[in-house]
Length: 197
Ligand code: GDP
Image (cartoon, rainbow, N blue to C red; front, side):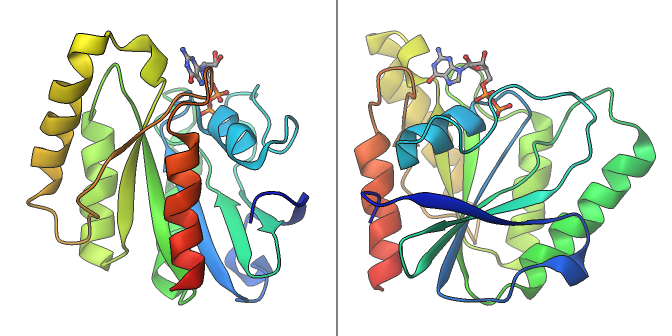
């Protein structure tokens, strides 16, 4: 699935510019700086797919990438950047909510959480929104290399316990690092399973 090229094919800042629903779509969301661009690059084996340096407050958009024949990957704008003005945050929220609600071919949102920090309150706000909209999501921990070996099991157990009460959450957490590529094959396998289903 990930052997071939991954091509950027659309960007949307407004809903009437979304590309048509084709095949299976998966989306990646997370706080600014969570390591989303790095993980998308590690996942697709491309170094330039998602930008790893951002201009804070720059226009936020949904970026669509095609992976193989039947899969689209959607890079959602990072949330929680304090300096973004209120009007932009509202526009962001509107875009995201309408995208998530109207996208019948969206199989799963991968919610990226920094393994060092766990859930921040803005993350749980976003999860509340996904639960409410009944959008299926799975938590992917990023920067796993920054945890000590002895911290891994309890961090994962804590996150999974928090997810147990959430109706739209997939119960299993994937621990990844784009620095050493650990967990990236697990994430690929989870995605491949969605395409087959
Ligand atoms: P984004 O804003 O979510 O797209 O995050 P980036 O991919 O741009 O990464 C934000 C920062 O986290 C950068 O300084 C990266 O070098 C760092 N980072 C990203 N992935 C990892 C990782 O797997 N391990 C560690 N230790 N740092 C990472």
